[in-house]
Amino acid sequence: MNPGRGFDPRLRPQPGRRDPGQRRIIAIVGVLTFGFLAIIGQLWYLQVLEGGRFLDASDKNRIRIRPIAAPRGILFDRNGVPLVDNRPAFTLSIIPRELDNRDAVLGRLSTLLGLPYQELVDAVGRVSADSFLPVRIRRGLTMDDVAKVEEWKLELPGVIVEVEPQRAYPTSRFAAHLLGYVREASEDQMKQGRYRRGELVGQTGLERLLDEFLRGRDGGERIEVDAMGRPIRIVQQTEPHPGAQVVTTIDRRVQEAAEKAMEGKAGAVVVMDPRNGDVLALVSTPAFPIDAFTGNIDRNAWVRLVQDPQHPLLNRASQAMYPPGSIFKIILMAAGLQEGVITPVDRVHCPGHFEYGGRTWKDWKKEGHGSVDLRRGIAQSCDVYFYQQGLKIGGTNIAKYAKAFGLGAPTGIELGTEKIGLIPEPKPRVKGDKKSRPWTGGDTLNVSIGQGAVLVTPMQIARMMSAVANGGVLWKPRLVQRIERPEQGVVFRDPGHVNGHIELSPVVWALIRDGLWAVVNEWGTGGAAKIPGLDVAGKTGTAQIIANSKSERGEDHAWFAAFAPARDPQVVVVVLVERGGHGGEAAAPIARKIFNAIFNEKVAMAGFRG
Image 1 (cartoon, one colour):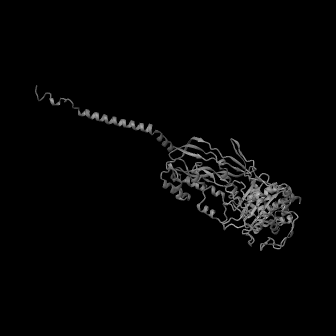
Image 2: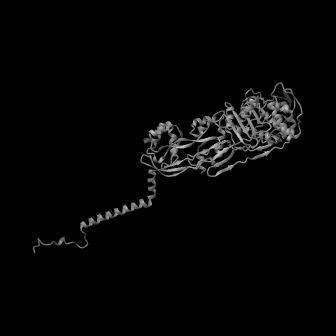
């Protein structure tokens, strides 16, 4: 065999060595196996460990959650007429997760609608940027605002306009202090855990008192949308449940008449049923624009309201205190007659002033009233008569009967913080206390005509006058008759509550009511409230802002408290006009208008017969 052409031993495979081609195949198989295992592991990770999260993210990209606000419960008057209702309104909202370029979108929105840019940033910044729940930005959009948003919709991803129920009122300031207003829950309220962001909550008045019943239960929708955010179909829907319906004691017709009568004046009116304590009307003027609070009130507008020297946010009916002036003489009548200190026939000569303690105490009538008995003294509101009778009764008894009539104590009306007033009484001097001083006869004289340190609220006077009208029962003012839910029926009913009873003899009650009838009908100070065909009994009051000052006309507070019909009292009307002057001239005519509105049919028939 030719060695040059035969088998080369070097080409024989050596033990322990692999073919290079085989090694490449093994390497490729290894890489492929490793890659396959990596893919399997990644798929397992995505499907098993992170599957839920990615499914949720996928749903977020195609499913939009839209809360549906429940309509707030309606407040009705005693006759079933709405005091406040709901109407559809446009709300601007932003879905943070859908904001592609937050700064650009918010900047464009600010320019289109004239909204402060920082306000938009703050609103969106209060929630997570990953949130898919709408954040309410502005309620009560106009049709022009809605048209602008729709026109620029492609440039405003994440910006939506929703239709939600919004409070609607008969007028801008109708029963503002009585009804109160609703606003979005504040940060402090949300910290309590009872409210969600953007939820409307009653802040004052009946809206706050009954918020638990008036708030409904929100519903919602899960909506499938396309890549442009346009709805395709509703995946799931939960219907909202409206709030409860509330039947109040208010008579809308009487409320409107009282507000009209007080137009342009500062003060308060309370109309009450003396038979059960029902509040038929409650007016405090000037009032605030209640509808402005329901939307987004401008900060400057809010500051102007808070700093307004006329204090439109103050509920003068129950949160402001005033000297009662001559209305307080009713207390002296009750105390003097019941204690036997004075009699109806006791006479006093009134020359227009009274000398006591080295000082001259003036009567409101400079020329005096002449010879005065109890009936004429109350009818013409003679100060000199009550100066002298007050000294006989004494400061202790005056304070005792004032408190028995509910003065100096809360009435129980549940409209925010209530002032309790002040009834001064003689107390021994505290040794070592330089500020304390003994009670003097001058203090008794001041108190006898409702001046000095005596302070009351119009609501207290309404309850006091109701007790005079009904024979001594002190009712807690009632605002709500019942609360109803469609699915449950009546869930709350207020039967009325008696706070106390004034023990006077029937003769004393009769003498007081007769004297108050004379105030209006026998040339007394309340003649401006006289109405043909309707017996009105009442008492005027002129309260000096500074006791014993020489106030110019128009600087005194004017009071008039009355009830009608005199022999069968059905309604009590209390009117206070701040800085109105004399009660008979400023307050009594207002009460007359209100009585005319209440008893219009009876009054009209009397006029026809006349």
